[in-house]
Image 1 (spheres, rainbow, N blue to C red):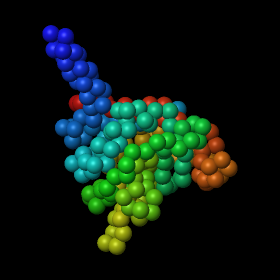
Image 2: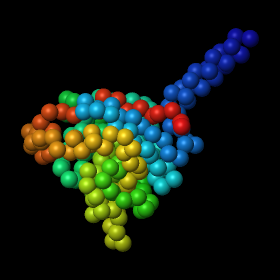
Image 3: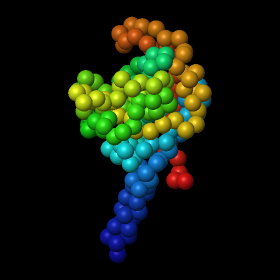
Length: 195
């Protein structure tokens, strides 16, 4: 009898754990609400075009890995990038890189969200960016990989536009340009309930 109760308890805890990390695998267009120090942004993701990228992003979201991170790279009329550093300017742990889904038909148009990566086309992990212009040069071509778009902003475009024009500077600790003078913090990112 004790082992039956123990098994039931373990089963319930596994169900609770699964619910806790549920990335809504059957939801083709999940939405994520991002609360930033400049306001709220809601993105709708496109699992039909970028299933690997969406699942990767949502895994970070539901685990709380984007909470209390900063937007560390802002270039007006180009991108607002974040997801990889905390306010102490420390790089955060990454999961394994994912396959590049840039050939999915989605373009790096204004208001879309895409994965940041290194020169290796299959090196994206946790960092993402918002396009604050129509950046078609980031799309794939016959001879090169692009940057994978996986959703778009459906609420808060004015917040994104305001982020895109904040003052930036070269940060000596990171030795990176284009770092906001005043930090913009992504206070929380949460997967919204299914519609």
